[in-house]
Length: 448
Image (cartoon, rainbow, N blue to C red; front, top):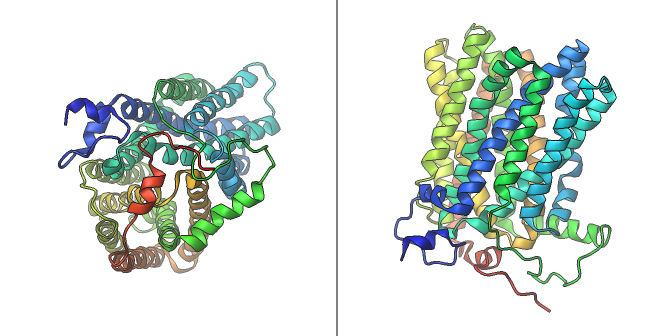
């Protein structure tokens, strides 16, 4: 097969032992990767600079935490509804529009501040609006990946997309801190707005063959309120009733989110109470977590896709290693060893999302992808908040060590669930039937 065939949209026969890294050489995926890397760095810049800016502006830690709350609420309040509308539009224009809106909304904050017109209420409105449009982008991206990447490299494609988040977490906070010290938090927000504009520019030349006239959708586009409840229920019915594999993935992802979010939330408590280290050493522990996640994401780019059962076994094994490492942390008091274990934990947990995304992309018809991914995002956010609240209480009441032991049990339970799940799927036919609908090699034809 000629090498030029790599640049197509999945309509060529798969190469023998294809390498996911080759996706970066293709025009469309390379642009998507570059835009996401820039965007994720900007997102991390925004989180640090915005919190610092609000604290400088108000001098109130409570008012600063409202920003975090406003950024958390949209997935919980609007996630499934956003999925309904996301499935009614092509993904590329949606992603470009979201990036342009984020550019404008972030830009308004320093501009209003410069004009002396930035009140706290206006700032909160801008933060909330930015969070709403940002909630749209993740599911749109997950729905768009299979339109660009060949079917036999979806794990690699999703892993490379996850690596952009890891790069953002490693580079963004440090760059934001330096920028705040040199030019001020409000000026860092100009840079943040520019990153979203660059992301939109990277998206514009991408070829993304997609049609809305598939899977029985009517030729006429529905109005804004037409059939919303029906479409919403169709998405829930697919996740919770029609597709048992998707439901099992949802339950596994819920357990995973409880454990992982709680661990990240408790890392400062562990550093202070168990290791007795300060903020500088805590920064190194965060870096170790990020490095482990990045290395794992990049390693998946060379992973041979295999069947669902094999992927679930990989997921189960990696989460078992991560759960054991969290348990070992509860008895460690050496920062160096703790850093090594935290890197292992980051690597083990980073295996989860690309594998789950790939299975969802294979199992879900294209006209339901937005609703399925927003349902997962909403469930993940809710379980994350439950994990942080529950294990935060446990850390206060029982101590950080006991809380880490509980997180270890949650991750080991997730590993067991994935292992049992792999045995269940080994007796199933696999996702191939849904794949042919979810990833048409040519624009789908409408069905009358």
